Length: 335
Image (cartoon, rainbow, N blue to C red; front, side):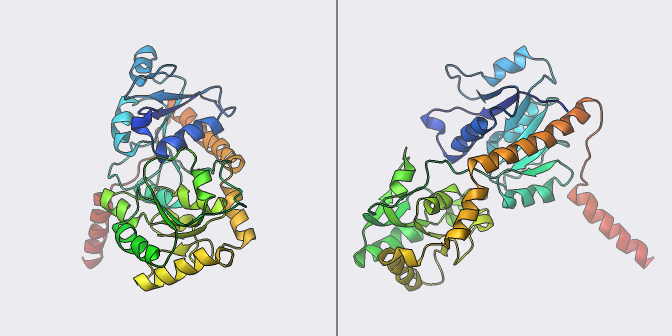
């Protein structure tokens, strides 16, 4: 089986492109070091000093080339796959629901079971692997003072949380902080809070795609916070209601107020069972996820060895063919 150089494609790495998805791709590239002959991050929207630029590489290297390309930026994936046609490529899938289909034979490395299930339905003949996101080792600890009773990150948070829940919690005398913008050391912020609220359901419903993984609630748990969260999409993969995290927006405003107030005043009574939390954190440690990458790359490289040698990738039947086949079978039974 071949080992191919890895190239993680991102639009850029500067402030303009800063987001959780970029952090995951950069971390994934780091975790894959030593699992391939070489690993590099390649940009395709902006040239950056010290980094390769996709248009340049495509001009320099004839197809299929030696590298395995990894695409991830949801809305850019169809165009990137067109540019990389004929070259070994895999889709590192975060959110789902963008509406595009993958060409036959493109493997999917899904960051969550939710996304894996989406592509298991939409591309059932593609090589599918589950490679969850890893928790950075900087998230953990938190035995000191926690001056913030309730912490909320404004980005992705719902109007319900910002406009109804937080004012009502302040009226109850709780120290509430609504954090705006990007935070370079989110771990320190989490370690200063007793309770963290994460309500992303409305954000992703408005965007029309799914919560791809949902790292912040797990990072907050790792830092010793009580977490109240929505359970949309991939959040339901990891957050067990009433065991690892508590539901936000549970029926009535008063229900949220009573539970969050109680958790802020006695957080130890609302934290997960240590063994349960440890299992979650261990399964998303960098060492565990690196092993997942090792196994996934073996599957993907074996697949591309076969395709490059001339084998044809399997193709899934289109939905319309499946529907017409079912209708035709019914007509035959009636005749």
